[in-house]
Length: 414
Image (cartoon, rainbow, N blue to C red; front, top):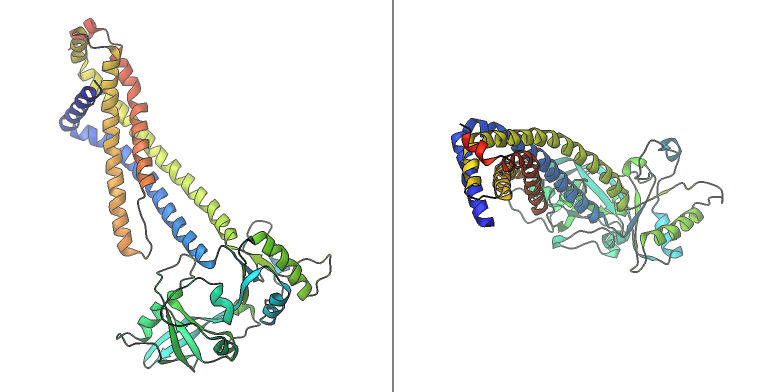
């Protein structure tokens, strides 16, 4: 019975599509646009969230960053207090290492923009980072070739560097092997000892592709490490079994002791972690998702009225046929489900068209922007589910009205 109803409903719906092309097109347009709007927003938001969370995770979920400025924002952000804070210093790394028992690794980092050059190839304002020896145990990265600094190279400020894929392409454009070659950083010779594995564009700008990393004691020759402009930070990774809250509690006491703060004085440092960034982005994604749902909802509402209009017209045109079916013994539920399936089928067509358009859009955007945008299975299921629900809601009243027709009066209708 179910298969019979489904077959007849599809046939009737197809006849409606063929015989009333313009009317059907205009009615399905609302569903198509609505599904396209909602699922496009969800697809873009999901892709952004996935890329941002991936970038955030690359910073380290079990890492605490000691910095001057906190990553939390809001209407009560007391920036005037933070301005007078000192920046982290390299000698604090030794103090923290000696006084803290819950850390597995610790590193110091400064950043700047300097000119990188190899022969006639130049990168203006290249992203330059000065790392201490232990920073490689805190920061997540992979090398495609070469090696990291030795402890002796790091502590003695050897003129060595590790460069990212984009830097390699710019300075060595003719497939020249970079390892062992000498480049100039801020006018100083520097030997390439390692290559970072290509990562692709990062939503937070933390990709290693554009980085030139050198030992901290080499970087201090031409970077003012005590300046806020060099963005100095201390990164601390917790031991296994130690969560970030426990690590932050211990670091708070140690940092207050190192900086000689009185018991009632406010902290003059910030302890940041990646979940603070995630929380800030969560609220933004929620707002964008709600806005997209509202906009798409109005389109779907219009499409729902269009489907209902088609079904009312379809019932009116087939009133005589309904009377004949009833006179031959067709039950009310048979008539109701027949028209309800037709409404669902029409709505589903609109939803499928909308999803196909989104899929084509992801293919186009994937070739234009350097970010992976994917129509996920969950969003496809959501689009199809919404289409079916709109079909049920829009088609129920016309279908119910058809099922309640008197067979004698229906047969007499011209």
